[in-house]
Image 1 (cartoon, helix red, strand yellow):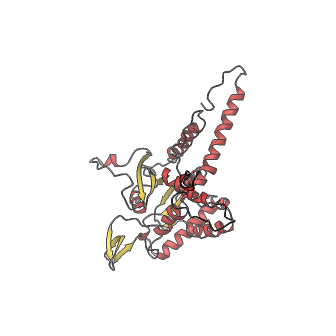
Image 2: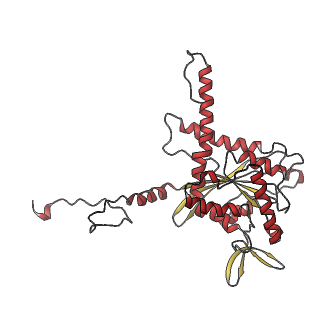
Length: 335
């Protein structure tokens, strides 16, 4: 067969991959990174954030500021003042498809109106705990199906942002109770809401007091020390732990300052710039949740919190099956 008649077999090289024809020792193992990137870009990402705190602390505004769009729930206008505060804690979630530079993400923001708004707030954490565990249960049931989906929809709560009122004194019993119980089932990131109401001295003292109270009550907020993978992780996370709780200010209002467009709050004394670290710590919170630790937050949700729930449920199920008579017909793994 002549050279011109030989069939041509195109190279399976993908777009964006480099050729190493001149390097005799090159195998191509590093191409797995490009393959993973392409697959992830096709599938998109999921992030489920829960915001908890009493009314008026700027939860919806902070979420809108984080993603620079209206991602949190709209407050309905109600004529009856009695109806504005729910009688019990409600769970409301809203999902959005967010895209930036070709990267798609399904963002779900879960709000908890009614939390901490009653005269008696005893056990107001229970509906939130139940909701988080319910999402683990939904995922578990999908996982143990014989004909399970190729990609299980993930509604598990990846992170809970807990809003502390800017009292400048100490944590309330409600704050301690909530974080103590919920830190065992979800990643908690505490923030001091509306931090522009505190002076810099008050803010520093309040943050130090909160860190001491968290330690005294054995509350392990994200990033948890026990999950640091190596010395480099520990060094990065130690800096974050020194800043917690983040003193934040939220605003979706744009202003012009020195010819630049900024998000901020305008006062008679000047403009508080949301993304200026000299004014507040919003930028550090954003970096933690989105730019540096998003995947780690999801990994800990799956490998630690969900895994703890899964093991407990399967142990309960096994104990239930053992207690049944031997001629009991096999049913589903979990009832």
